[in-house]
Length: 324
Image (cartoon, rainbow, N blue to C red; front, side):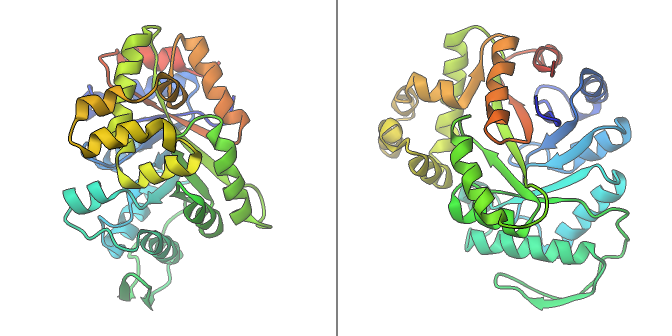
């Protein structure tokens, strides 16, 4: 198993105020990391702020914070505050997010996502160094900003990426990449692009993978929940293009056609079993851990498990999926 082994928080069915025992149990079971996302639930920083106080041994990461939904200075302040709350234990993951989250939900134009993410990475790194920044980036300008707090240890920055351009940029501009919604075998394809972007930089890039897990031996339930999740994500344009690049265009064309026609039920039903089984880990705890190991063997350095919401007991799932 990888040296790092994380899980996605918060657990949707549990109020944030009741997460302390779950965080503590994760630490006692051998999990090393807690990772958050940011879509329509909790923001990406608050669950980690709680964890910083409750579990002083776990590394805490965002996977991811959208590059568009916070202004540059506020983004730098949020990162600095989190780095100060968990010195040496925080990793900042940032990415484009999607047109749905950025434009439809937040009212921000989803323009130049590659450049916006690159510019935000460059700005945040400069701000964390303590310098006063006056600069015209390609997608925004900053005049006279300096962080009002000193960061005890500058956190690593990781960029969420799907296709070659962004994967290579992640490796060039940051300490690694965050990958998502792909199979264990797909990791080889993605890792080759990361390595190309990394070039002759010292060390090795970190590769964090959000891995969706449905820990049940009820295959029908796992596939039904998996189809629902895949339909919700892979019809978003950025993910559709990602899976076309990975070679799933023919397998998923029926889903895309039905979705475009407005038939959500037919779109979900059109997702082949083999695609679900590649993108969603399910089965016994031993089968799940073996499948997770395939991601690690193919280049993932930090698995970040994401439990699918289908009525399971979060505490039991944490125990079932704990590293051995």
